[in-house]
Length: 162
Image (cartoon, rainbow, N blue to C red; front, side):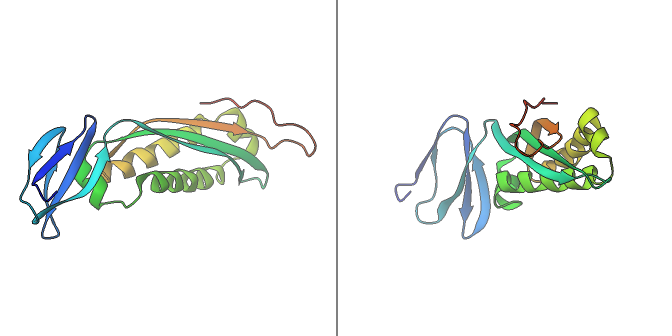
């Protein structure tokens, strides 16, 4: 950095600060910056990322448990917002999805959650899409795996993804 040259790789962006304040987002290529005044605050991967969360028990509204796992495909759309609005997007997206799943599952029966996961999917998708948009992140895809818990002593069955 002391040479005043910042190289940004393909599919990435660099968020530049001067005196602790946002200055610019640099795209791929070679860029000249003011030595010792400008610094790279963050290097952001602009490619699609997959967040996979293994199935965990969630209590449905009727008191029974269902196992719910999910995968979220997301990408950074605005490096500035993704740098300053959220500190760790992957953890935030996982926690947001888990919270939305728990809330929605608590409003339905276990049987309905397993046989018609579209309702869960719709609600979680809306929450993810709306919230991550404010963080400069685009949610591209959400897949849910919903199944009843395995009986004690039996191997778990294959799960369907919606």
